[in-house]
Image (cartoon, rainbow, N blue to C red; front, side):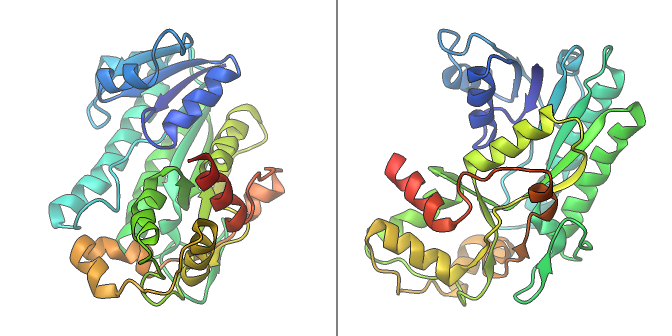
Length: 308
């Protein structure tokens, strides 16, 4: 296949490029920084990768590179948990997803020949937060800020169906790998100061990065896949259990809780992502046959920390 990837240098996108390259596919890697992309994907190793600089929120010549691609993967979007949620930051979080998806869809609609599939990221924030409810792909949307962002994001992606392109939306949970959210949680544990965040009762819906990439690859190649898939592992855990397992794998204690006010001081409204959470099950994902390499958090953390 020839696959275009928006957000190719990100935590998930970079691993997706590696696996597509290993399988012999051609990759068009959209990146805001050509220098960063060429450092990550040197031509001596990544001979199948064409780097295309772009500004995801602005239409431009980069859109022409979509023509002739078999599939497009859109992972673009500003990080949610970096910094406080000021009004301007919230607008960046929303517009980075809405406008980048608008431009990807426009590129697909204008392309000749057109890609046959768009795999578009979304997030489990779509469902809102709850300590008691269980959500799957058929559950209704929540009403908070992140739920509204996800609804707007997905609505833009839905417009690609007007061109006959198959659409798969992947609502991701917390992606675990050596980097991302886990990198921010490790330092206190390594200093013997780790413990549950907030009450510890909030749900933590997670997925190993390798399993998420496998789901995206499956969505690209299996023509029967369409609609919404939860990019989460089949065994979500409460935050207290996650932190207990993390301490166990690191051979460190996990008893010193991180109080709500400490996170709120650091992240503002963004603290809701980890202080509230939601229990999300990947029913559609399992039904379509994804074979998880890391279905439990113990398996996932053991592999990541051994490899890291």
